Image (tube, rainbow, N blue to C red; front, top):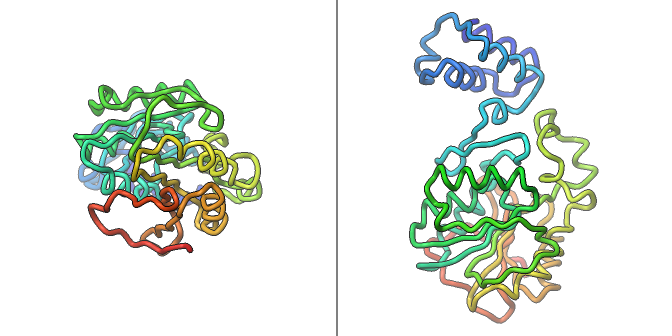
Length: 285
């Protein structure tokens, strides 16, 4: 198969980025660079042919490659993990930029561990805790922590963030919880439909995890500490209402496309840690 042939097959199957995906598949399975893939040739390895067939069935590229990039780092993935997205880099950047020197954070619903690990790679002075309910997903997070050499600074715990208790306090608590509504699940692309539903939706209105996190976790914040969550772009008003009802002062952060993407909170009447770098913020009160 040539690059144009693979690209045509992917396009015919409805893949949104057929050239990108074709180059990634060739480079991965032929063990060559993207430049080498672009140089052309007739690629006949059975592994590549199988990969192309899987992608034509709309299996996510990240699951075929068994890895994906986030914040400039590559993370191992299985189909038991939510695929890291560029939207989540705003939450991770916020943690990296505002965590105080020598700070400690918790990452709830850590999944593959990409947020916590990327933060620790950027902040060599920091320590973190990651919480994940599912053992098979937590196993991937442990492997990623070892692969990136942060296993001594990241404590990974199995537990349900809606019911568990922690034994420490933190400067920052962050989470990218399941927030897709039941109705929205039906509109997702074939690729997203193959990601674990448990990592996408709470099975209801998409707000259940925010109610639990905002009610349970402020008591674990150190003085001046903050709690931040990723949200769906239409959830800003509802999530801020939940935060204020829990005694928190919320601020909405928007992504590069101007969509509400993160709600960052501190205890009402308390001053948050001073930012190390100003982000684009929209106050919501």
